[in-house]
Image 1: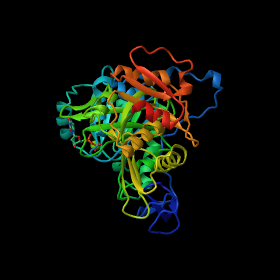
Image 2 (image 1 turned 135 degrees about the vertical axis):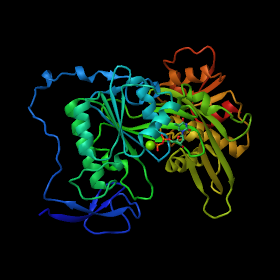
Image 3 (image 1 turned 30 degrees about the vertical axis):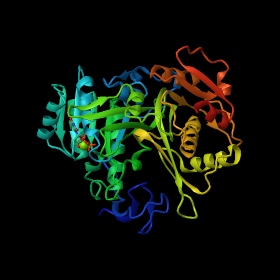
Image 4 (image 1 turned 45 degrees about the horizontal axis):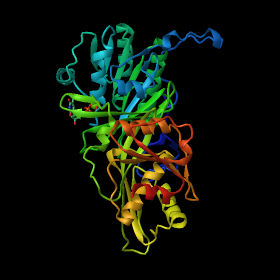
Length: 449
Ligand code: TYD
Ligand code: MG
C-alpha cells in the first residue's frame, strides 16, 4: 500500500515545515503555508536516460547554437537567442501577457520548426482566436490542450517537436502524485520531469509560471533552481508597457531588460526605451533630473523625480519607488552633512518614471540633484542629464561606460551632461554635447543652475 505523509509547504519559497503556521519562517510571507499529502513509497515515472561520464574536451557544443525568436528584445534578455535543450521559465502575474508573448514568437520560430504548444488553461479554439488576432499562421504549430504530464510526454515522444511550450506549469499534474495541481510538490515534480525530457531530447522548453500573491498556488520561485533561465514579465495594470527582466540565466547575463508595449495587435517591441521613458516629461520645473543609466548592455535614460515637503510628524518620511530606500536615506544624510542641504524636518520622496528600478550607483547623482532642485525650487533645464556615484564624503565618483551614457544623451538631443570629474580622463570626444566634469555635489548643483 502506498505510504502517505503530510507536509506543510510554503507556496512562495517552497520550504517544507513540520507543522502549519501563519507565517513562513524562511521567507517571512504570511498565510502561504499549505498542507500537502505526498506519497513517499513510489516515485513518479520519470523518463530514464543512459548516463555516461564524458571528458569535457569531448563534449559537443554544436547543439548550443541558438534559435532566434524574431523578437530582438526577448533574444537579448535570453543572452542571444533560445538555447537548444534550455529550459526557460516565464513568470508574471495573470493577464500580464505571457501567453501572448509565447504565441507571438511561434510566428518566427515556427518557420521550418515544429512547435508543440501545450495549454492547460485555454481551449484550442481560444488559442486559435488569439493566434488569428496576432496573425500567427503556421502549420507547424501543434496545439495540445492537456494537463496530464504523462500524456504530454507521450505526445512529445510521438510528435518529436523542435520547441515545446508549457502554459502554465500550475495546471500540470503527474498521476503518481496525490496533491492537487498547483501545489508545490506537483509544480516541482512536473518541472523536473519536463526539464529532464528537454535535456534528453535536446529541445528548448518554455514554461509559464503565474506569480500569485494570495498563496493558493505555488509560485515560480519554487522552480527557479531547476530551470536554466528565469524571466519575469512585469508591468503596471493600468499601463500598456511591459518589462521583461532576467533573474537567472545559465547562458548569458542577468542584468538585461526587454521592453514591450501591449497593443490590440499583441506585444510590440520598444526599440528606443529612452525616448519612451522621457516622453511627456515636464520642462523647466524643479525636482526632476534625467539619469543616464545602463540596463544590461545598453544605455537607457530615465527621468527621476524628487519631492520635498514639510514634515507634519516628528519623524520625517523617506519613500522611494524604483530606488533603494536605504540608499535614499544615505544620500540624504550625505547631502545634509557634507553639502549643507538640510532635509531633517522635511519628508523626501523619490520616484523613477516608467516602472524602472535603478540599482546601479550611477543613479546617485541624478537623484541627489532631483532632491536638491526640489528643495531649492530651482527649475532644471530640460537639456540636462547626469550620472555619477555619490560617496560618503560628498565626492562624485567615477562609473563605468561613461562614453555610452554620454552618446545616448547626445543622441536624444540633450545639450549638457554632468559626469564625475574622474570620468573625463580617457573620454572620447563628444562634439554635439557639453560634458561637465564635477568633483562634489555643490559643483554639480552649480552646473545645472
Ligand atoms: P495573456 O497573454 O493571456 O496573459 P497571461 O498569459 O500572462 O495570463 O494576456 C492577456 C492580456 O493581454 C489581456 O488583458 C488582454 C491583453 N491583450 C491585448 O491587449 N492585446 C492582444 O492582442 C492580446 C492577445 C492580449
Ligand atoms: Mg496565459
